[in-house]
Image 1 (tube, helix red, strand yellow):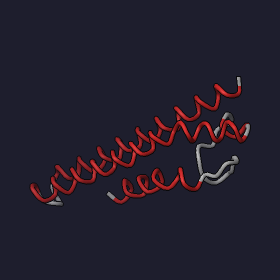
Image 2 (image 1 turned 120 degrees about the vertical axis):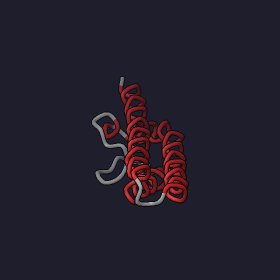
Image 3 (image 1 turned 30 degrees about the vertical axis):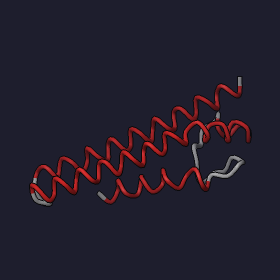
Length: 110
């Protein structure tokens, strides 16, 4: 559950702290996105709505985990299955946002 929260927090904060120029700390850091400030800005603008969906995926996954925990017990097999499933869904959404942002940056380089 805590890893899902950390990833959701990162996805929520990233659009606010990436800045206008490529940096080596925060953001979608690929060869294409780091190639120019324009590619950096475009990639993060394209990824922003998908990052919001990542956060909502995390909220939904955590809500489902809490509901399962209340109904079946927090130490149950169901909650043990729900936690990694929610984490996987959030990771997939985050990776998809990065792939789309990188594709946009590659397009601007052409």
